[in-house]
Image 1 (cartoon, rainbow, N blue to C red):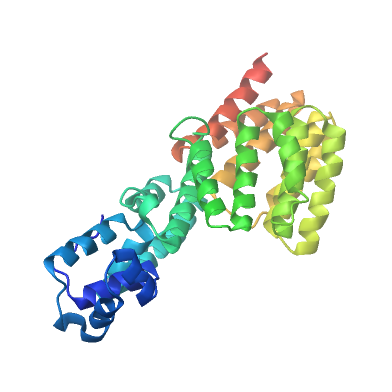
Image 2 (cartoon, one colour):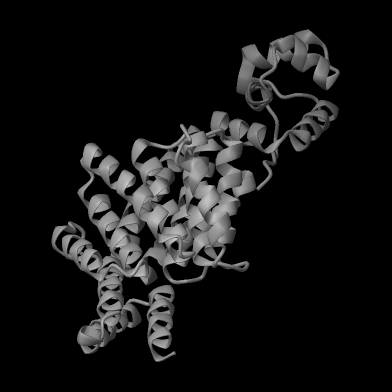
Length: 348
C-alpha cells in the first residue's frame, strides 16, 4: 500500500529525505526549495510546518518514490511497525519450519495451510529482501508438496512454484538456493518422463560448486536413476555406486540407504535379481527415516523385484497392494501411478 502523508511537518519531511537516502543539499535540489528550508525542517522537526505549496511538492515526491523508499519512510516514522514486521517474519519463519516437518511426514493439508496463509497475504513485489526470501522458501516448500502429490506440470504445479522461487533467489543473488531449485527442477523433468534431459541436467549439477557435497552426490545418484529408467542399467549402477561411496564418506545414512534402493532397481532392470534382492534388503534394513513416502518407495521397489520372478510373483503383488494403500491414504498420486504402471507391465 502506497504511503500517504495527511499533514507534513519538519519531522515527516526529514523522514522522506532519509528514506530517499539524500543529503540535505540533494533533497533541496530534488524538491526545488532552498537549502535553508530543508535545514529548518531538520532542526525544528515537528515544531515547524512547510507552506501549503511546499506540502504539495512533498506529496509529489513521496508519490513518485519507489516501494523500497516508501518502506523506509514508514519505518522511520513508525518504528513500531518495523518491530511488528520483524515479529511477523519470525512467525513466518516458524511456520516454514513446521511446514518442512509436515511435508516430510506427508501431512500435505496442514503444510498447505501453513504456507498459503503467507503466500496468499503478501505481494512479493512489495516485500523487502527478508520477506522476499521467506516468500521464496515458502514457494519451494509448496513445490515440494505439489511434487510429492504428483502435481508436476501446469499453472498450479511444482514446476511453476520452483520457477517462480528461482526468479526470486536469482534477484536476491543467493546462488546456493538457485542451484538447489535447479536440482528440484531436474527431478520434475525426470518425473514428467524427460529422462535424457533430466540425466544431462543432473550431470551438470553433480559438479556444480554452488551445491553442497551432499546435494552434488544426490545429483550423481539421480543421473543413475534417469539412466536406469532409460534401460542403461550397467552404466547406471556404476554411477550409483560412486554416489553411494560419497554418502558413506559424508556420513549420510539415509541417502546411503536410498542409494541401495536405487541400485536394486537398476540391477532388476539388468536382469540380475540376486543382486537386486541383496541391495533392496540393505535398503529395507538400514533406512533411518520412517515416512509414508519412503515406506511406499521401498515397498514399491521391493514388490517390483519380487514380481520379476514367477516364484515370488504373488508376494510381489501383496507388497504392491500394501504400498498402494499407504499411497492412497496419504495422497501420493505419483507413487500410485508408478504402482499401477508396474501392475500393467506384469499383465502385459
